[in-house]
Structure formats: structure tokens, C-alpha cells
View 1 (cartoon, one colour):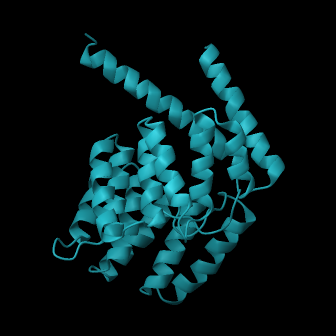
View 2 (cartoon, one colour):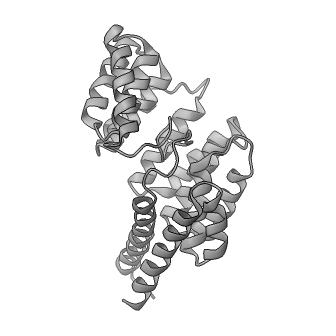
Amino acid sequence: MQSPRIGSVRRRTRIATTLLAMSALVVVTGCASNRANTGTHSPASGYTSPGSSQAFAQVSKWSKAYERDRKDRSAILGYSSALSQNGQVPQAMAVLRSGVIAHPKDREIASAYGKVLAMNGRFDEALNVIRGAQRPDTPDWKLMSAEAAIYDQTGNHDKARSLYKQALMIAPNDPSLLNNLGLSYLLSNDLPDAEYTLRKAAALPGADSRVRQNLALVLGIQGKFDEAIQVAQAEIDPQQAQANIAYLRTMMQKRQQG
């Protein structure tokens, strides 16, 4: 019988290799899409590469709005999101901390603050903020999703999936929730369920580029390279899509040989 310790090590190894594959594809893709993304595992207002001209433009735009009125909730959310996407996480955290003080009952600001705290590795604080904003009598599914994403980041995938499924009872067939649930399966190396869930998410109205790119990633990790390229080509330049999947294929072959 396999000891719990050995099983745990092997499980962590599988998760690490899956994450390595994910990271590799993201690095090659770069600024693949500037359309809005969904879900708490990805930026809420669209992906831009940190340090890019697009990222700087967004920071400049929202910094002006924020300076005009530091208590304006739209400016708080927009500026913090732009800062996060430009890699300025501590500054985004400071903006949202002030926002939570100015708007103590605003669940969207609390959710954003919790996510940024988690990005900075402050998971306990993040959970406290999100749970404090939640109301049992009128639960917010976005807060549930944000809390679930934190559990995924700390390796408690069963707890995360339980929360995603509770959130889906409030917002059935929401593509962002299904996207996050699919990524939760991916993080625990449960690839068939990840593929099934991301296919379902990608087929829904409102599913965006990041959902389909996540589906392409899961297909590629399973060796379904031709279909992965087809899905990816719908989102990014065909040559870039082929390069991404070719890179993933090579990396996986090296991993198997090692």
C-alpha cells in the first residue's frame, strides 16, 4: 500500500508539472488578447502584458480619474485593476485598502481587495476580507468565486470546487464560474473534468478569449495538439497558435524523456 507521504509528494509533482505547462504556454502567448477576460483566476478587465504600452496607457488613464476623486468606486476599481495588470500589485493593494475604508459595504471592492491580497500571498487576510463582505442571507456568487480561487491557490481544490458549485447554483452556466471550475480541475491534474468543464464554458454566450485559450491549453496538455491549435487559432494569430502548441508539445516530450 502506498504511504500517504509518497502519495502526497507524487500529487504535488503532478500539480507542479501541470502548472509548468500552463506557465510555459502563457509566457509564449504573451499579450495574446486584449479582450475582456472572465473569472477570478485571470484579470477581470482584460489581459495586457505588464510593462506594455497598453498597460501603461491604462494606468495613466485611471490614475487621472483616481486623482480627481479618490473615493469614486469606478476609479478605485479601474485604477487598481490597471495597476495589478502592470505588475504594480503593492500599489493596487494600497488603492483597494483605501477603497474598502471608503466603501465598507461595497462587495465588489472587497472582492477585488481580497484577490490582490491573495496575489501578494496574504491568503488569510484575503479570506477574512472576502468572508467579511459576504452575507449569508444574500450570498454574492462573485465573492464565492473569489474565495474559491484563494483555496485553489493554497491547494485546497476540493473546498474550492465546492464553493464554485454553490456559486453556480446562484448563477447557473456563468462562463466565468465554469472557467474557474475548469482551472481548479486542471490545477489538481484532473484533465478530463477540466476539458469537459472548459468546453461547456467556451460554448456559452459571453465566454471570452481567455476561456477558449484555457481550453486550448488543457487540450494541448492531454496531447490533443491538432484540436488545441484549432481552438487557439480562433483567438490569436494562427502562426502564434501553432508556435504555442509546438512549444508545449516539445516541453511535454522533454518532461516524458526526463
